View 1 (cartoon, helix red, strand yellow):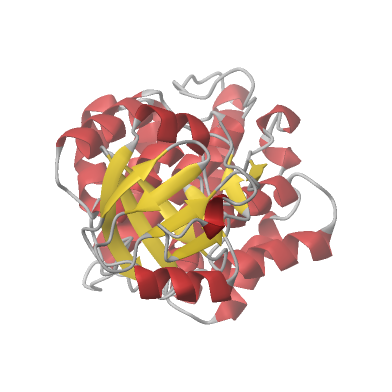
View 2 (cartoon, helix red, strand yellow):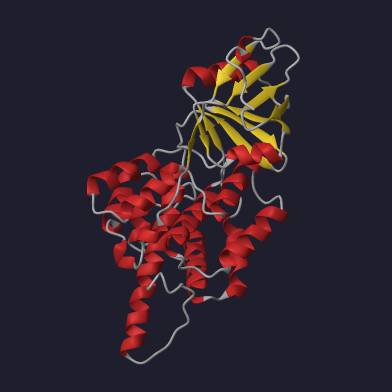
Length: 333
C-alpha cells in the first residue's frame, strides 16, 4: 500500500525524505525483514541493519550499491541530522520509519526508481573478448597510487618483487590463489582466501576489495572452480573475519551483485569503445580511499591469470600434454 499524498505532512513526523533510487531487490528484503536499527553513520549516508543484512541509504558518490537506496547530498545531510546510531527503524517496501524519540523521520520509497547493476556475462565467450586489457594495465600503472595492500603497480606488472620484499608475500598469495582457482586445487584455496579476508584498514579492508575484483571477473567468465564461491561463502557467513560492511559487499558479490562502478568496467571491457572504457575505469579508481584501486588490483590479477593459463593450455596442447582446468565450456580459455 502506497502512502497518500499528504502522508509526509502528517504532524506525527518531524521530517520526511524521498528516496530517489533503490536497488530492485531491496523491496523484497524490506518485506522479509521489516525491523532493524541504524548501524552506522558516514559522511555520504548511513547503514541500516535489517536482520542479518545491511541497507545503505545515501549518495551515489561511490556508485549505486547492490544494497543501496540513493538520494542527493542535501537529503543525506538532513538524514544524518535526524538519525542517531541504534535508532530503531521499521520498514516496508514503500516506507522506512526512524523512531528517534526527539526527531522521528520517515523515508518515503514509493517514488524511488528501481535499478539493477548487472554484468553482461552472456556477451563473453573467450578471453579475447576482453578488448581493453592493455589499456586497463596502462591506466592502473599511470594512476601512480599503490594498492591498499601496499603493492606498487609498476613493480607488480614488471614481476619486480623479490622474496625479501614485504609485498612479495601478498603477490605470491594472489598468484597461488588464482592458480588454485583455475587448476582446481581445492585443498589450497581456503588458506589463500583467509590471507586476504579482513586484511587492511577501513570499512572495506583492501583484501576484501581484492576478492570482490576476482568475483566480478568470475561473474563475467565463469572461469574459476566452483569451490571459490562455496568456501568463501562458508567463511564469510560463519565467521567474524571482516567488517559488517565488507561482509555485505562480499555476500552480494557472491550472488553476482556489485556496485555499478564495478559492473560498468567489466561491461565496458567487452565493448570496443576505448574512451568509454577508460572513463568507467577512472570512476572505479576514484572510489573510496583505496577500494576502487584494490578492486582493480583483483580484476588485474584475474585477467593476468586467465591470459597465463590460456598460454599454458595452448603450449600443452601443442606437445600433447594435458592439464585440468576449472573453466566452464563457456569460458573457452
